[in-house]
Image 1 (cartoon, rainbow, N blue to C red):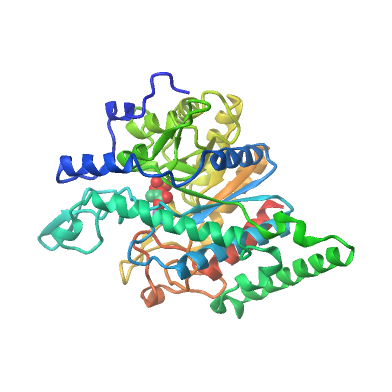
Image 2: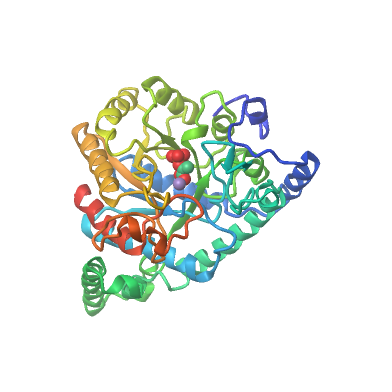
Length: 447
Ligand code: PEP
Ligand code: MN
């Protein structure tokens, strides 16, 4: 760990992508209050995730990290949380059943509210306003009051994270995630599709296997692993005031943990080696992710590994490549080789979403093509196979709802259909059918 690190040492470094809070005193008061709030997650849970990720870093497990681009304050209900959980659990079942590899399920959920932006302002006609930075900062409505950063939104984000986590905990521990219920995770709009039917066949096989075990005399009601699912939370560590206000010291070990989520990641726009985001992350003991875009050099990646995981703990650091379908096979191999040659025990994951975003010609809506998402994943698996490196996970933006935000898929969505049900407040997400379809494709690439 970084020996000069302190809870607020990040303040001595330039922090990119921070909002211009209008009143410093109000911002400081909110953070002071938050620093007394109860933790959202527990240190032992974080340690457990770290141990699971360490297996993935050694090629013995696979990371499925998925959820919204940005969680919304307005679209927050038990139903959307349940549907998101259902689709992630379904993807995990498909992956585990098809490959026999344990799947670590991590949501972009219960804290994924802050967004980095390519420009600090947005202009329509003559009006120029602060950019929308996620509901933890401001609102997407285009007027001055909505776009002015409001620190009280951080308190709202904390409470919404808490209520989301509460539901996730009860669903994953209270019977909803029981393997004998695999059928009930299929939503109506998915059931009739080809992916849905393929899933039903797997669900039927799993139920048959469970009946077989019960008939052999195994008391399945005693097997907790069949009834409960481990599900972890994560988000981008963007607002360093918020993250540090929820960071606490473990009295036993003296280590610091960011207790706003089990794991946090550093985004492509804030992974500056001399910046505040890397400094903050270097001193906390949570497992970390770092996005790796197409301009990353070998020297940068080695320095990221050295700064974020100097003790070379497997699973401590996940490098999430997000290169773009047309670049990955060219850009990724030298980076994987450099990390391997230096002996850094990283977990490699592929984000096939963020390098493949474009604005649709007619509507101007941000979208992604299912085929390009697949192509980037194929490139990722090929590169790792050719270098004898473990393609350890995927990082996906999805929702359980029947949205029309990404193009293509088995039941194709066309450009002129994007505005039928485009609900994302930020980047386009795969819908439930497209996500399930993708899980099958990933399973085929992995085996
Ligand atoms: C994101 O994960 O939503 C994101 C903004 O990604 P990136 O930092 O890779 O652009
Ligand atoms: Mn995104």
